[in-house]
Every structure is written in structure tokens, then in C-alpha cells.
Length: 369
Figure (cartoon, helix red, strand yellow):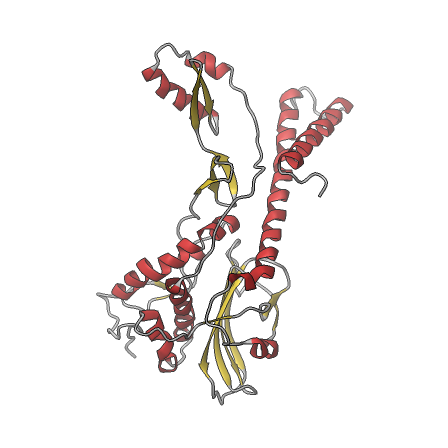
């Protein structure tokens, strides 16, 4: 059987074949098909609607440190409320922006590491030959600073983002061998041929629960014999949830076709234990009473995501503090001279870890919480 592009109808052949991610790669998509879109439609939707969605979700991709098939989440340049500029590495790891400040014929250099400091000094020396690079490097002050300000980010889903979310449902629906004629309105919405609202916000708890909390992307086709509804559902980062009613007079058996995976680890539905799919609650909660997208409806999900990422960040900081203290302990007490732990080493470690940890809590304003 010949495959055709579901957007333009072109026959898919060796000249226009393309690999389409069911969920965009930029937000962690892994499942692919070569039977959905021709190369032209793949490029067009990728450059416009999928780009809009991935750009909007860029801060969340960075926060979660989404695992991708290709590439890693983008580092973000952020200006804090105080005016201070930082760089956010994937995992929401803040770094100082390299800076050179001249004060009274002296230079105050901020660098992220010694190599960057050396490079900055050598660059300055070209303009100011009197700079003693070696002396400056010998007098480097190593400081570890923690961010004490909130990181602002804004999340808005425009029509292009909604069309991309709709395309995820259409991709999966057709990928699973379902009749694309039944989603003609959704396909027209994806192509922007009509403005009829076909995608609706799902504001309740996810119908999917897992044995272990994680950050998941989910796409599902759910049919229910009792309510006579056939519905497509998409959930991004365990937070943003939308659905489409494919058929309001469904007369088949109750079923669900599901695909889900952990965006942090890349583990897919083959490796993840799903606890329940609450179909009855899902069909009770679907509503098309409002056209407007209100992201405040996801407040509970966002808070859960933020708390999870905050805990993960704290755990990583604690591990880093302990590792740094152990490294410093080995420098002060070389293993070849101190093959066994001494009281002095234990005292040093206890003090160093405590001081670093209190400093971390103080600078991140967590003391007393």
C-alpha cells in the first residue's frame, strides 16, 4: 500500500521521504515514522509550528534537561530583576557571564574557570602590555557563588504552538494505523486552513499515573463505548495537557493506544510501569466550555514540576559539596601518606561540608524554610 503525506496528499517516495518525529525532537521526541509527511511538509511544519512550540518550551527544556535524539537543550541568557546577567546551562544550572570591569586603572575580571580567566587576561594584554598575566593568575581568587534571585521566565502558547500540539496527536493517530479521514478537521487546523477550534485544554489531573514520579511526554488515543467518544490526548512535561474529540458517536470497543516516555532518562513505554489509565474520570472531565487557553489552570502541575526540579537541584548541590570536600581532603591528606581515615581528616571533612552546606543554604535563601 502506498503512503501519502497526510497534509498535502503527495505520494511518499524515495525522492520526498522524510523522518518525522511523532513528538518534536526539540522537546524530547524519540518515536519516528517515514510514512506520515513528505519532506516539504516536514520542513515547513518543523520550521514554523514545531519551532514555535520548542521555542516557547525552551525554558522548561532547559529546566528539565530534556534528553534528545539529537543535540542538547539550549543554554539561555537571562537578565535577572537586579540587572545581573547569567547563563543558564541545561538543568537550570546558572553560570556567571564573563565580565571585565575597570576600576582606578585596575581590572576586575569575572570568569567561570581558570582557562577563561587566562584567555581574558591575554586578550587584555594585547591592549595593555603592562599587565602581568602570570602574576594575575597566581593571585586568582576562587569563589563559589550561588544564585540568590528568582529566575524569570514566561510561557505563552499561541496558535502555532496549538497547531504543533495538534500535529502530535495526528502523527500518533495515523502512525497507529487509524483512519485519517476521521481527523480531517484537525488536519485542516494543523495546515491553518481553518480557524475552527479543534484542540481543547485539559485542566484536570492527568489520566495517566506511574509507579514513580518523573517528567513524561504522553500521547494517547482513547475510545470509550459508554460515552461514545473517541478522543486524542497529548501531555507535555507532565504539565501541559490538550485533547481533541475525534468522534462524538463512537460505537466501537473501549480501548486506548498510548505512547509515553521519561524526558529526563529517555526510558520509553517498554521500560516504564504505568499504574493506571483513568478513562472514566478522563471522559467526565473533558470540557469544551472555554476557547481561551489559561495556563494558570496548570498551576498544580507546574508546582509539582518545579518542586521536583528544585529537589533534584538541591540533591545535586549536596552531592557536589560532598565531592568537593572529599577532593580537598585528599589534597590536604594524600592517600599515600594517609591510607586510613584519621580523626583529623574526619574533623576537616565535618567542618568543610558543614560550612559549604550552610553557605549554600544561606546564599540560596533556604535557611529557616
